[in-house]
Image 1 (cartoon, rainbow, N blue to C red):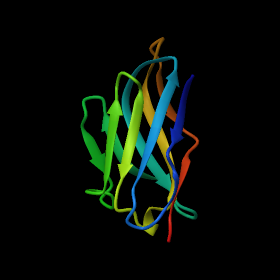
Image 2 (cartoon, one colour):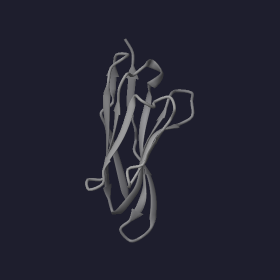
Image 3 (tube, rainbow, N blue to C red):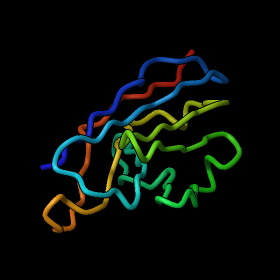
Image 4 (cartoon, one colour):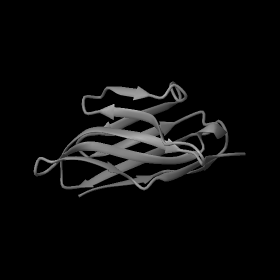
Length: 120
């Protein structure tokens, strides 16, 4: 009922930047929170950054000061600006949205992910 599509991943050199985007579509009445998670090979999926409708954000300590999450409530989109990337940021990045469907049912949806590789 809700589809999330991520884009913007790719290969970047250490110290470089990437901007990830996530678009939510479907029978959405409201999105309360959008977040970015990442999962490196052999590791658990971890929260990178989260933003709620009012604009409050929280970040994993490893990305504070380097990554910035933003959203456009009207367009149901979220972005993650990633600067000063290091090889440790290499992972598949997933978008997650939580909210309410048109008929009043809560939802939690995930995108399929976009790969970010930081390497020289």
